Structures are given as structure tokens and as C-alpha cells.
Image (cartoon, rainbow, N blue to C red; front, side):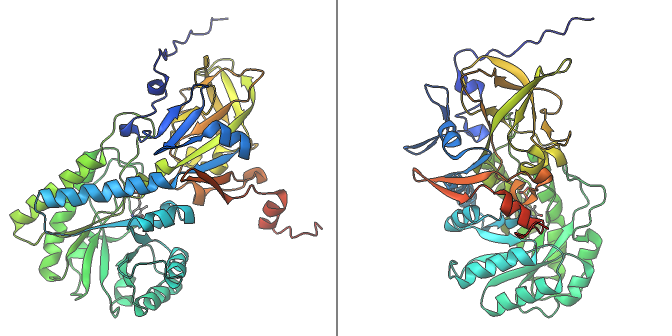
Length: 467
Ligand SMILES: *Cc1c(COP(=O)(O)O)cnc(C)c1O
């Protein structure tokens, strides 16, 4: 029997905050801290939240949403673009559109609206929520709504209805048959182009089914109300160069298309700005926004055209860091020969609650929520479902966690879970979704109660009489 390879654990030294990559702007962890007792803390100005305390009080699995993070991030982002527009003397306007599909929960949408976000929707049902907000007079009349995705009749009818009620609602043509359907549309329209270049992202598919080819866009018959050229390269773009390359390439099409469509005045560069999930060096919104304005200014001046208005749909960038998911470790099991020594089994599910762990092998910053100065151990996490895919191994590597002690529960916090996971979530093995609380202005409110067996049973048609 060979002796197991001895692992060299990284030594935390004295600076535990740095060791857990907390308190750092470049990692979006500037509002995290560690208490004297070793608990994970969040600061909202002078308000503080103890995540270990919240987990004990409300139970786990638990999602904690911080609306102030959403507000801060959006305010900063809009601020960068507006500042660089001024600095470089750029003449186009800037529009931020929040892509609703990233997180449609009310506790995310309302703070975004309060900071002046416009919206981008992908389906009739998302647009229906927008209609409800509009009817509830929750909107400034100036809000702009972009409609992407394939247009069903129901979707098109709703677009028409909202336009006739006075909303600035702009359908983005997604396929050839929509050209016909939208030819009589009275408001502004946009068109989505499937750029022929490749970006550095998981979604850089060889065959993209979205939008029209560059050739088809350039051969469009004249549409007087065509105002926006839109593209989207995919989420979590790995390098800023890919973002710039997309803009430079799309600009060549913008210039050509404007020759046949002189009313075209807006370039919509879609989403894709990434998050440093792994807390490694990453590009920044400040740097990228500056470069984008510079690129667009230089290119338009060279081409002798008016500076285009710029629409940006960075969703994940704004909302991912606003939510933390907390689990309790309920048991551990040794792993004989692997990169990690033990399974830590949690009281929730990666496969259900953090679906991208399973779908795209998403890596998460996974840290203890208590006992943060404890002796460390290399672990893998397993979820509570019966599925062997319900696990998180940091890509086959290991995660550092405190050793479990007899006299204290161990909690684990997973950072940056605010994007996409909620609407992808499911009920494998009929596990309950995490309870969700909001931490705002020093107060806690419950946004989603813990699901009871009855609630979950109902989702599967068990309405009381269990026959
Ligand atoms: C998904 C999507 C976005 C948001 O992408 P992020 O990576 O979250 O920024 C924006 N625009 C369109 C058209 C999308 O499909």
C-alpha cells in the first residue's frame, strides 16, 4: 500500500481576512469581514449582519440577499459610463438595461429600478411582470424596455398593448419571420445580429441560433423605425479583449447598416461581463467602461458618423454578488484516495439550489460562515439529494474548511449566488428550496418562507387528499 501523498495546505498566517479573500474590491468582497469569534460578517455602511447568527436564527439552507449591494453596483456602473462619456466628450447616450432572466425576484428588480435601470425581457411572462409594475405605477414613464427572445403571439400582443399604453418598448427582431410580423409595429425596433466572431466564454457555441446572420442583417429591406443593433456574445466572458473585439466587430456592421437605415442610432452590446467567482485577478468595470467609450468614440470619428447611443445589458455583473447561500454541514465521510480528505455533506443541494454547479461546472467561492480561524482540512461537498452528481469539488480540486468539532455546528457560505440560480432551481428528491431573507437597513425580512412538505407536494399535484 502506497502512502497517501502528503498535502501542503496553504498557511493562513495572521491575515485571515486576506486568506479567505474578503474585504477586497477586486473580488466584490469589500463588504465582508470576520468577527473576533470567527463568524462571517457583512457590513452595510454602519449596519452589520452576522451570517453565522442569521443561519442559526433562521435555519439552513438559507439565502441572504443584500439589496444595498445591487444598488451600489448599479450606481457605480452607471457612474463610470457617465463619467467617461464626459471625459472623452462622447456625444451618444448611455442606457443600462437589466436583463430580467438573470434574477426576476422582486427583491432584485425593485432596487434596480430605484437606481434607474431600464429593462430587457426574454419572454411573455417576464413582460407580464413588467406590465404589472407599469399598472401599479411603479415606473417612471421614461423607462425603456427591450424585448428579446423568440416572439410568440402572446408575447407580440403584450408588446403591442404596452406600446399603445405609452411605454417605450422596443422589440428586437430575433429571426426572419419576425421581420414580417413587426413590419407594422409603430414604435422603435431593434435587430439582433449573430456576430461571426468568437468570444472567450462557455457559451461560445459553434452554431448560434440567436439573431440573424451578418449577411441577412446587411441585406435587410428598409425599415424606417430600426433604431438598435443588438448582439450578445454569451455570459461570463473571460477576457476584456473579447468584449472589445465584439464591439469593434459589431461597429463595422453598425456603420454598414446605417447606410441603408439612417435612423439607426444605438448599439446594444448585450450582457456577458464576468464575475471573479474564483477570486482570482479579473478585469474591472471601471477599466472596461473607459475603454468601451474610447473605442466607440475613435471608431465613429474615423468613420465620420454620429457617436452611437450605447446600451449595456450586464446582468450577472450587477446582481451575482448580492446573494450568499448558507448550508449546515450535517455529516462527514472520509475519502480514501483523492485530492480531498473528506466529504462534508450539507443540508441542501447543489443540484437543486445552485444548478450551475451541475450544469456548467460553475466554481464558487466557498468559505466557512463560522469558525473561520479554525484548523483546516481539505474537503469536497455533497448535497442531500440521492444523486451522485449532487456535489461540489471545485473542479476535482479541494475546498478548505475548518475541521468539524464536536461542540459546534459548522456552516458553509457560498458567495455570489445572485445570478441565474433561482429560476433554474428544482426539487430533485423533493428537497425544500432554501429559505430567503433580505438584509437591508440593518433589518431582516423574510422573502421566501421555508417550503413545507405540503407546499412541495402541491407542486406535484398532491392537493390535500393523498389518494
Ligand atoms: C442572458 C442575456 C444577458 C445577460 O447576460 P449576463 O452574462 O448576465 O450579463 C443580456 N442580454 C441577453 C440578450 C441575454 O440573453
